[in-house]
Length: 146
Image (cartoon, rainbow, N blue to C red):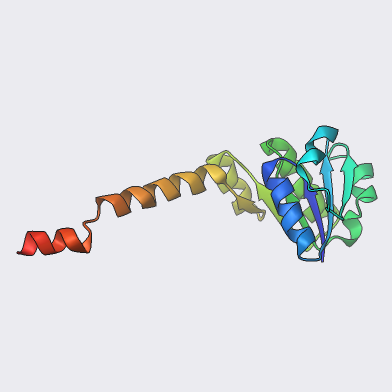
């Protein structure tokens, strides 16, 4: 599987490393050349320095043959625009977009982008943990029934 990842921050580097170790053909784009230092020395994928919304860079990265495009930069606008280009213009079969703003995430999800919102996921996780903390344990239940 050919996977094109836009953004080599913590998430992008971790994703690229995992997919590369599984034997996938991974290509990573980032505008900051220093970001690639997050990749391990044994990374076999391709790295490209440039803007992820630049069609020349996307073409160099092989977007025309990509099976998956994941936009995981720390900028919602870049992720949204690059994902729309990948999906609408280059017809990449699977496009995943990280969007921090929950309202924008809902809107673009409704428009057909596959989205992930770390803000919403974090809040849901904390809410779940608080619910678990508030629920009485089986030992506490026994004490109250004795």
